[in-house]
Length: 83
Picture 1: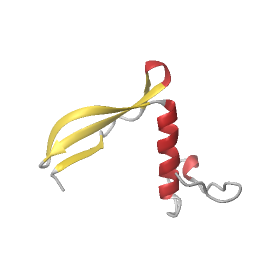
Picture 2: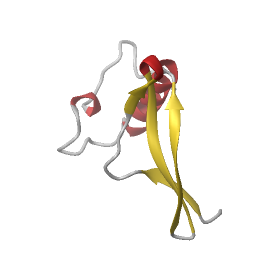
Picture 3: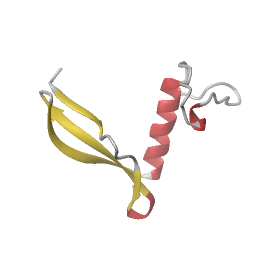
Picture 4: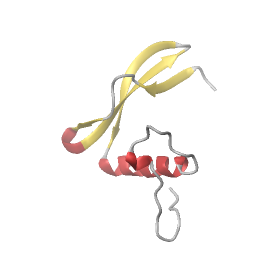
C-alpha cells in the first residue's frame, strides 16, 4: 500500500463535457497533503458500466434514508445481473 489517496472533490460533482461525456473531479493526495485535482472522463457507455457495477456492489446493503431513487432496490427478471 502507498500513502497516495484519490477521492471526490468536496463541492464539485459529476458534470457533462464534450457533447455528453461525463467528468468526475477527483482530488489526489499523498501523505495527507493535497497534490492535484484530476478528472475521470467517462463515455456514456463507461458510465453505464460503472453505474451497473456500483449498483451490484451496493445491492446487499440497505440504502441510506437520503439515497436517491436509483439506489432503491431493483429487481431484474431472472435474477440479479452480475457486472
